[in-house]
Image (cartoon, rainbow, N blue to C red):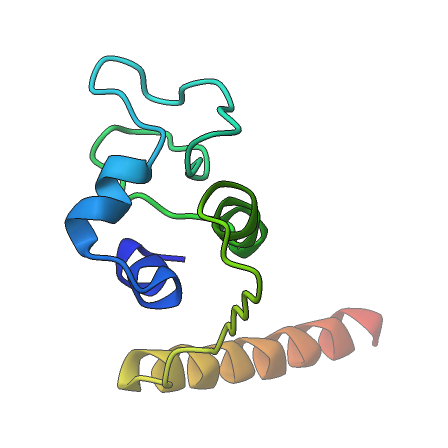
Length: 105
């Protein structure tokens, strides 16, 4: 989940989500802290903060004391890029089938 999604679920400001997050400018992936909101592991400090839905629910219940937490994950709308990639994949599958048929004969 992005910071914006966490903000919406927790009904907190963007600044407070960053304040709750277990991050450190000097440490890329700090150790788990049960009193903070722990982000997913990152490869680079420039990578955006992402949070696992279960971690957001744990934080909301255990730390913030929110009793009822509903996290709904929805797929982003399909873009033109997704459609083109799906078409390219379909064509590659057809090409592979033709090559395999040619090799088997």
